[in-house]
Image 1 (tube, rainbow, N blue to C red):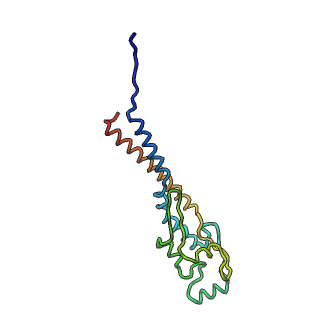
Image 2: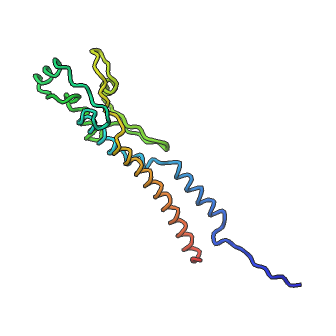
Amino acid sequence: MRRVRFTVTPNRPLAGIAEMYREVERKYQDFRPAWRSLKPVFAAGVAQAILSEGASIGERWEALDPRYAERKAREGFGQQTMVRTGKLLAEQRDGKAGYSASRFGAAYYSKRRYAYPLQRGGGKAPYPSRPFFGFTPFMEEATLNAIQARIDQILVDAARRNEAFEARRGGS
């Protein structure tokens, strides 16, 4: 008796498909390219918080103590809260704030030793906290966009690798 049969042969070896998925998985575990792109966004957000006296992050600061405000003006430093020498603000504008990115996240921080007491309050002469490190809606949107861009790039890279493989095999 004669049999009728057919054979199924994948265009791409199964090992190649598995390797492509492993490569996608490896890239999904490393979002450093997304995190690195956010440093200027975080710097702008912190600078805006300082210039808006906390309003941009929903933490409006208390007014300066009247005696300190008078002394600050007399010494030529103006009336803006938390801008005496301008070094903290310049750190944001000049891109000199600390930043590190790992596979899992990013850290943005001020290198100024007085940043923490300003953020949290206290010090030798107790003063109120004036938060300037906060996450604004703009920063959140930029972060989500950077993550989406990284995911899109991973998928585009995988598609290109697949297209290159198909071109080497002659299509099908």
